[in-house]
Length: 168
Image (cartoon, rainbow, N blue to C red; front, side, top):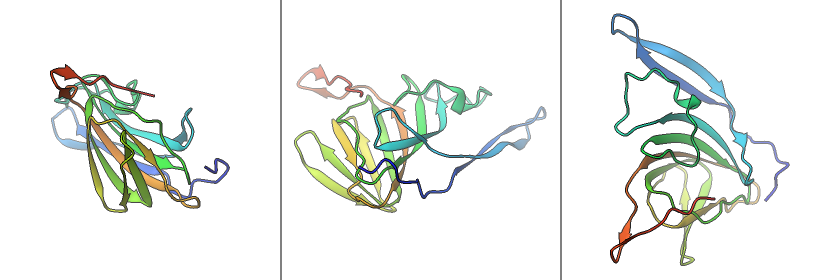
């Protein structure tokens, strides 16, 4: 993994709607921000929005970026952009959520706990259903950008036992 490479992707633009005092639709914010390096290395994250509950409460005026969002939010949802550095990878992990990974640029390798690997390219979508997995950017020269939407879900039950979360 090359950690000294500059991220080539543009800042992320986020447009948030809301309502005025009369209930009419308005643009509440329109801003750009970059992804930021994470402690585990191998990627940069940009939190776009999070909700404290599912279903979400559109009457809550809290900016979703102001919520404490770890990898997931218990009983909530998260959308973030992840920029994977060339050769960057994640630890093996499992969350109690259903995740939609939308590959915006580059390729990402999905590896399951038994070693099965699948390469997923630009404009493809991964539906991650609470399985133990890791991500890896197979390119040694190019970044990969993935949008992840995570929505809380009950733990998967196998043989009468719930599979525990395994967060890095």
